[in-house]
Length: 59
Length: 149
Image 1 (cartoon, chains in turn green, brown):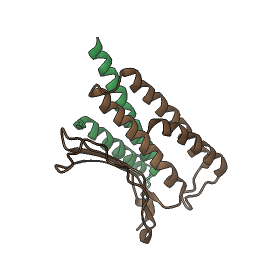
Image 2 (tube, rainbow over the protein chains, first blue to last red; image 1 turned 30 degrees about the horizontal axis):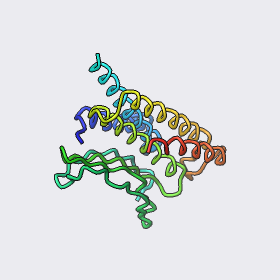
Image 3 (cartoon, rainbow over the protein chains, first blue to last red; image 1 turned 180 degrees about the vertical axis):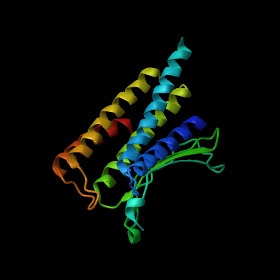
Image 4 (cartoon, rainbow over the protein chains, first blue to last red; image 1 turned 120 degrees about the vertical axis):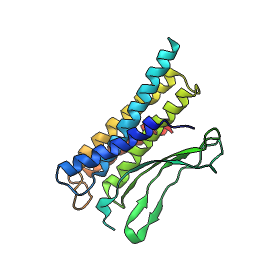
């Protein structure tokens, strides 16, 4: 199974964003639930993009 | 170890030795009691064609509400990712992928509602509103998640 570089970056970016958000709010602790939600958001976007690509391939 | 410093991990690893085409069994419940940390349920996948392994795992303070919830979000992410991979490989149809997305969305709504119902305390890790309602919603989310497994 291959995972695209874009997907890996998407998950990593989601975590980075959650960490940045915590830092911008002056927090030095990581909100685990927010991070978990961010990763699911990235996975949701990946699936949505795959669906759109498959539809495009079908013409 | 400061339990609040633990973060969710969505790691991508490449393992040349992982050449089995079968999906590896889920890891669950490997508790490190000395540091009050648990390695929550995760999904490990491998494939013969690339040797790549996708790992979704969650680290959370043992016994806290987020310890109960975070693995479920991780399971959702894994289910969506699996569906995307299978769709790209032509192993499932667009309709099947859309159903996974819809079921995952329904489970996600229940998880978010459970989080809101709990309103976990940052200090104690326990629910400050309604733990019973949070548990009820988690159970409903589990029913949705079971469909995705």
